[in-house]
Amino acid sequence: MLRFFRGSLPAQLLGLLLLLLALRLPLLLLQGLPLTAGELRAMLVGERVHGGALPYRDLYDRTAPLAAYLFGGLDWVGARPIFLYRALALALLLLQALRLNFVLNRADAFPDRGYLVALVYLVVGCLSTDLDALSPLLVGHTFVLFALSALLPTSREGYDNRRLFRAGFLVGLAGLCYLPLVLFAGVGLLAVIIFAANAFRSFLLLLCGLFFPYAVAVTYFLYAGALPNFVQFHLEPAWLSFRTGAPGGLPLPVQLRLLALPAAVLLLAVLRGLSTPLGPVFQAKFRQLMVAWLLVDLAVLAAGGGTAPGALVLLLPSLAYFSLFLWQAGRPAWAPEATFLLLLAAVVVVRYRTLVPGLETVLRLPTESSFSTRPDPALTNLRNQHLLVLGSDQRAYLTNSSATPYLDWDLALRDFGYLNQYAAVVRIGRQVGADPPPYLLDQSHLLPQLRHLLPSVFGSYVPAGPDGLYRRTKTGK
Image (cartoon, rainbow, N blue to C red; front, top):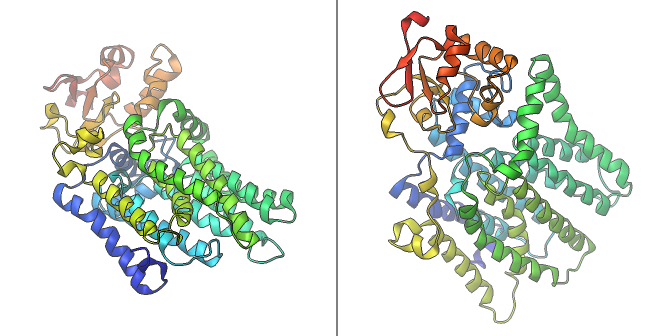
């Protein structure tokens, strides 16, 4: 198989696409892929943004602004377009693999050419169904990979100023999708130190490009009256997730077990790569750059608490590059082919473990679908209603829509957690009282206190059957 993908003909490209579909589609056709918590959050954000809500002013959620508007655009195409989410996730993974492969081939970063980089990228990317779902990290990581080509000089004279600015600009766009990705500016710093004649001036150009998207975003939210919330809801929670874990992701123990296989292959590939001599000076410098890339990967992974949806994608570029050293011809000659086939078999076993009875127990690895969001049996009769959920359980939103800015409960607690403060009560009255939702699900038992503090807003809610569900009577209108 490796021998086939060492070429650069259209047949290899077609083979990549067929292999990707062969690894992904059978599981989707046999079992489907339940809606993940991250996708539910993205769709709820998209609904609100499509409905005219401005992030951080009319929507209390920590989703980065560029990702929020992307989800809003997808909702404009169709209401909760789950198929479009999955298709876009597949297209982005394929685009990333081909882009990285193209950059390495064009820059002669490795003696051998072909589609081996894209092959490893796509095969390992099919390890977990976590990458079948669209996530802000997956979207932002695409910008980072496109920035890589701009970090490489095209001549002996060094960098073109426009290329450095573009590299920083793309990293800034990645940060507007998933904030910890701005750490890849550190890779840019090392790149200008290695390749540029005037490292300080070159790094200033990179920083100008990095801060430009954020300058535009800050200006936009300043004039929209949402700048304080932009700082409070986007910048602060993104870094605090190191301690709390990213919302909507897999539990940390499960995520670490899923990452064990690519981490083991990556460690073996790095050890092999660092001990392999390279010919041209540029190839040795590029290897240093990829070592820094790997270190930043680990930093971004840690910044998301290790649980960010799509976390596996962070390891794929480093794994795809360093694995090239594993596929080099050696003795015995069949060893690279056998190693790759073993990797492919391991990916298939992990991905399709749910189809083999008892395999999950043997691997001690529950399927990702077991952590998906499923409907609440108590709310089966509540459908297509506007709803306010006072709590962190968002299962009610599977069949209903959010009616107020309070989508992220952790951020909503900045108001609902301080009902003894006048300013918090005023904000709740302003955000909810403008258009009170027909239904309210009180998971935190706050309604009695809210009735006392804001009787004109919450005084007309009466029990509606299931425990904690309340319906607004017509007298409240």
